[in-house]
Length: 87
Length: 463
Image (cartoon, rainbow over all chains, first blue to last red; front, side, top):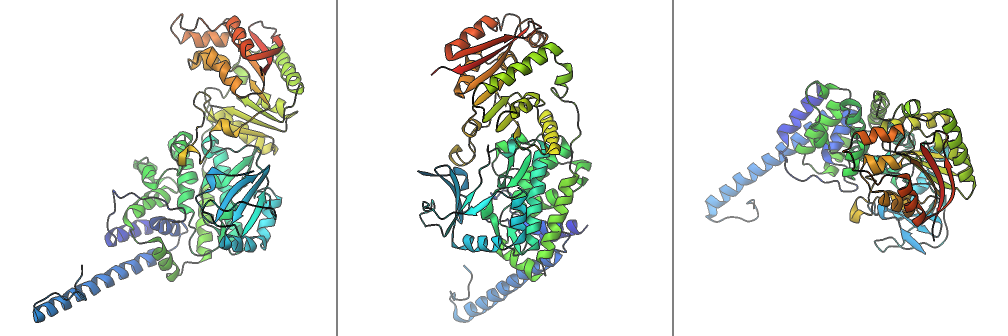
């Protein structure tokens, strides 16, 4: 049950990279494999997923806030501010 | 004269090379620090003494720089494994015992603050029936989850699972990819209730989903895991669960084509006695340090050879028969017979980078004597290899040969010929074989068996 919940949770928070070529760098253990190994150990890796979700939400929130500020500056000055506008 | 082992380039911190007859490993600065920590542990000496880790001592002679040009900080010398073999040449029980040893070594290391940086099946070798861990450069201070989990799954756990749960032989698949089977490859093999077999949901299904969906960098995941309270104790729990899973995997001991050959073959007691006597005296006639037994079946003649030889490699294409032989040898603790699974008509070629990372079988095994007993008819009639090709192949080993030719009036040959169109193998005759043999070999002895349907030859390759 924990595994399924974890998979669903991570499936929701992370982009689907199906079709990308996943290669093993010699010492790159693979992100998914690291989490899977934690689950195999019976570890409540949900904590990791929650932290990842928080990272993503935080970064999205920061991005939206940045966009809002940029829009506001653009409205005021009539030009894009490269320091605050996302590429 | 030094040369680098072509299969040891992946880890920049460690490289294996030979200088003369010495097998050496160079270690970078960080790897040398890890080695110092390793040698201060008790498990390292303990497992080395029991043969579970390859014998390793410091070497203070000259060493070439690493393939990347930097000098090594430290050089160590390894005991040599008599004959290098690869996981796709191992039977099920061999791969399972090797996997169990990898986990045992890791558990012992974790208990003393060390870990392994990888988890590939190529970290292990066999000395007869004894698996041994050879990658000393893999030890590093423990930190976070086991980075070798994925390699372990791909080259050991998944191959074992597909054989145990689905009845799919792993050898051709491991031979097909040096990195083994990916979680997605294996997830596609399990369907319906098979997905609920022990260990599949976590190690295969979930692993496959996570591999596809988690795009966060590995280092970030490690940091997150640590921040979530992941500790060495939790890595130990992972390894413990994997060990339980591996120990529980087994294959049904179903009969195979050759599993009851000894009971059903056409040898009379007199034939068997004569054959044993001939093989024994043929091997005693010259140096027999390394004997290669081709088509070894249950290893009866490999055992005979092992009475005189330092080491015997017993090769057979029937994985079930080889598995049975390995289990017996393991029980007996015999370390001078190495059983291997290989189709002689399709032997292991070079794999990996430039086809050199894992050497072809014929490059790894240089015997002093060759046993080819009750084999020629299977190659020539069963697999359509022309007799000339068979004899030239035997000559290519460049060593003494003990070969048996089974005549056309023997029951086994009649059975093989019955499955082929009439007249297709008219050249399969004793006279033709002898003619071809004497073209490439000096035949020292010839011994017909009492039944009159088989003849044994002792021959040396012509210079």
